[in-house]
Length: 127
Image (cartoon, rainbow, N blue to C red):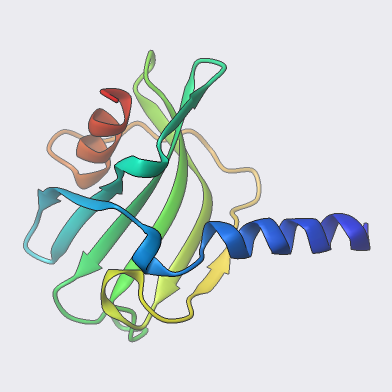
């Protein structure tokens, strides 16, 4: 178990490595911030699409975070997604060290019309 945890931590560190390696492309703007997708890291496997999103806030939230990164699994046929890994950052554009985690038993979500989640899933599925 300890070995598995170590491997996961190493993989997780590589996935969340420096923001300079991300190819963030803005896909949606809102009143509170902008949604981005890293088109360089989108991959499709077994009928699913896996992709990174970034939500960059115009001003910090109640916890002092300025951005959120999320690694998602998308189902383009049923147009739904679920979160696999997330992080909260005190700096813009996912900068600095983030508080990270992975939701247990992540449920499938169906994005609402005109939402940032809908736009990011649409762009990820189109690649």
